[in-house]
Amino acid sequence: MDRRDWIILKTIAEEKNMTKAAERLYISQPALSYRLKNMEKKLGAAILIRTANGVSLTQQGEYLLEYVNDMLRQFTRLKETIQNMGGKVQGMLRLGSSTVIAHYKLPAILKEFLDLYPEVEVSLKTGMSQKIYRLLQKDEISVAILRGDFSWDEEKHLLANEPICLVSSQSLKLADLPRRPGLVAQTDASLQAIFHEWWRQNFDRPPMVTMELDSMETCRQMVCQGLGWAIMPAIGISSHHELHRQPLYWKNGQPLCRPTWLLCHRSALELSAVQAFVEFVQTAFQAEADIFEKNVSPTPSP
Image 1 (cartoon, helix red, strand yellow):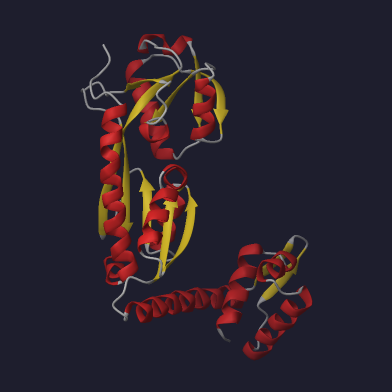
Image 2 (image 1 turned 30 degrees about the horizontal axis):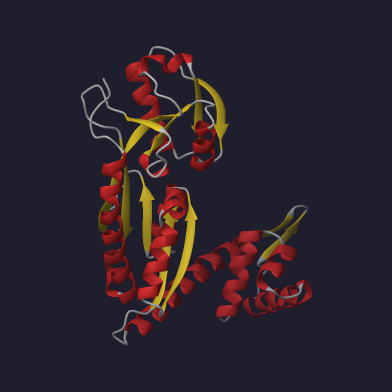
């Protein structure tokens, strides 16, 4: 088996459908089936079982997939190491980012970074922070930018810790919230837990949620139209001065905050592209800190 075979098996395992796998690999389905049969012939065992819903791996196929994933990771590390030997900032940057950071911050950061280091090739994956964290644990990415708190014993940098705010189109008193329509944006479990605990500390009845929305940006647009209040991290509202915002506080006076972390393996810092990006993104987030302070008042509402 060669690297092409590894990629073919990994793709089939992910798609669980020969037609979709062939489309993704840009080969014909007969060519894909022929290649698969050759693999099975060389190994002397069936790799796939065809089912009513597509295909699934046999026990031998599952074992082979573990080997394939390991070999692909080793090949990636080998390529990164060889590219790093030139002493220049170049090579592959395998980056994972939470969806929120990818939406609000990453485009500008990556543009400036690649303008500075044009010989770096970026491979980016985005999604919920838990998903990106799992990719980092499996070494499928070199650097992760995550929202919320994660246990990580290797390289870890706090990039931001922005306030969580009550957001509305008009000024609101906190005591009035249970009687006013509330909007909720889809988010990860850790931020939901912060909201629920803060609400429990302050009110004895549930919020009157009238809209459950698929993104923070959609939620902000609805708030701008006066359709309800929302509780959002400052990252989604800092540049929208038409909105009323109140930083929220726990009963003990501590502010509700949403941390953003950069995580990576220490060994990855030996790669020039990773080292340069880690330093660059820390500087970029530090520059944003003043904007957060300017647009969000640090004092509690009366």
